[in-house]
Length: 104
Image (cartoon, rainbow, N blue to C red; front, side):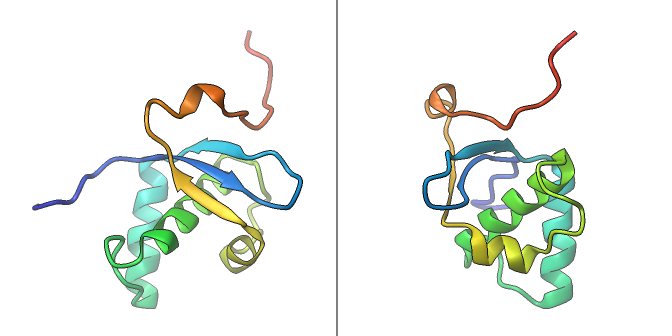
């Protein structure tokens, strides 16, 4: 497969001015949705359009985890998102995550 690294990246998303960035762990389901959507719309590959890819994966992860409603469109997410970046193992400890249910 050449240079393709098949993994589900963690992403940091900055949605709006003054809002804290949130972190999402993307998953296989998000990658598969990317593959299907990319083919349907004839979008470029993730190597050719890495910002499109990361933005789409962050949207898919946000929907999958319930951080945004299931009817929140990709186009809206793209228009309203200020920044998306892939995180490395060194980046994750300092970032806030979306609130969720308490463990236990």
